[in-house]
Amino acid sequence: MTTPTDAPDTAVDEAAYDRRRLRQWVTGRARADGVARRDLLRLLAAAGLATGLPAALAAAARAATPAAPGIVKPLPEEWFTVRGTNAETNFASLAATGHHTPVSHFFVRNHTSTPQLDAKKWELSVWGSGLAGPGRTFTLADLKRLPAVTRSSFIECAGNGRSFYTSQQGQKAEGTAWTLGAIGSARWRGARLADVLRLAGIRRDAVDVLPGGLDPDYVTADGTNLGRVRRPLPVTKALDDVILAYEMNGEPLPPDHGAPVRVVAPSWIGIASIKWVGDIEVSREPLYSPWNTDFYRLFGDAYPAGGSAPLTRQTLKSAFELPWNARVTADTGHHLTGRSWSGAGAIARVEISTDGGGTWHRARLHDTPRRADWVRWSTHWRPTARGPVELRARATDTTGRTQPETTVHNTQGYLFDAVVRHAVTVV
Ligand SMILES: Nc1nc2c(c(=O)[nH]1)N[C@H]1C(S)=C(S)[C@@H](COP(=O)(O)O)O[C@H]1N2
Ligand SMILES: [Mo]
Figure 1 (cartoon, rainbow, N blue to C red):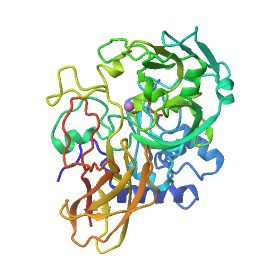
Figure 2: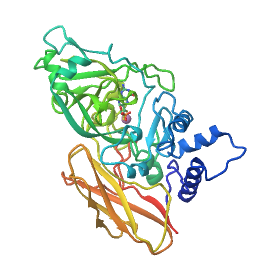
Figure 3: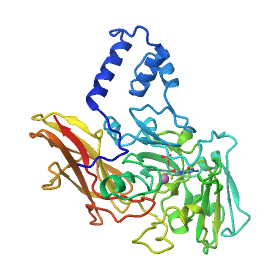
Figure 4: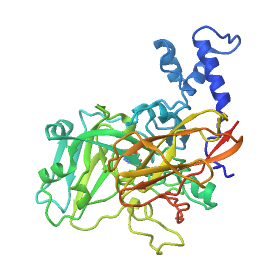
């Protein structure tokens, strides 16, 4: 049985026991003589128990939460696995959330660190050869005066699932070793990028728009300064369904997710959704940045020397809302839940195998499948034989594509779409 080297190797029973004990301490039913209160508060925060505590205790526990450098919000270990400057959502923790991912659980992918910008002073400048006039700047109030649109859409990193190239296929892949939690779905509200571009005077012969972030310059491990995080969008996508979002799940956009305004490019790889956007170049010539040349193309044996065309839409994936190596009791009915999504269309069906891929049965879908969004699903499982088992979930989307058994390798490990073999132990 394969076990991803970097998947959280959780002893679920231990964790549950620990949580029970911590809860007892909070309510005065467990003693912790000789243990600093601060240490227990840190444990509480890590166990995700900081909510529901008396206010003073909760604040202390939050302060004790370990953070990734540069991420502002608390990252309790129950909900996140910190990977460098990024925080991956533990997929199992999504079982307690609804269709949309609360900000508290939403993954963060930062090339550098979250800038704390003053919304009142923020301005977006739209400029470049693809405009008829000198361009235009927009304040947040200007954007809010334009017709607002709301879109439910996932944002997913192109490298989500990357670690499975190694753990399932024995192949190397450069980059953050995500399991499946570099995704979240939210209700984004904002102005249409198309409206902003038209007000700025976009010409008919404009071909690319290049939104740039206001976060610090990105410097690679070998010391090369690649400048601000920026990636061109073809005008056809920019004028289609892209929004400049200032709200996430009905609240002002939080700092880590791009406050005050980010680009949301539904169905496309996460890098297309530039956070903390400060300017947008509109061009009559095709534009390049490191993020559509060296990164976010497919390189490797199966691809041309210069790599594939720049990546656009996300691929097809499924994940169980279950810890890795979960222990499940034999001869008991279990309600298994998870989510599936595709960048190419809506999800048509999800099938589950609990016998190593021998037989498959349909999962029950709990959302109306829509493009650019995920569906929640569930299935019933009553294991009888004890021992290790690999659970599989396999989605098919409305284009007719089904998740394959293996994925063609690329050196940077993008777009992993093979069926993930989720290890559990029946006890
Ligand atoms: N300005 C800026 N925008 C950015 C990034 C960044 O580091 N800086 N990261 C991108 C990447 S690679 C992804 S996957 C998404 C992640 O969005 P999230 O942090 O809100 O989950 O933001 C994208 N937009
Ligand atoms: Mo990403």
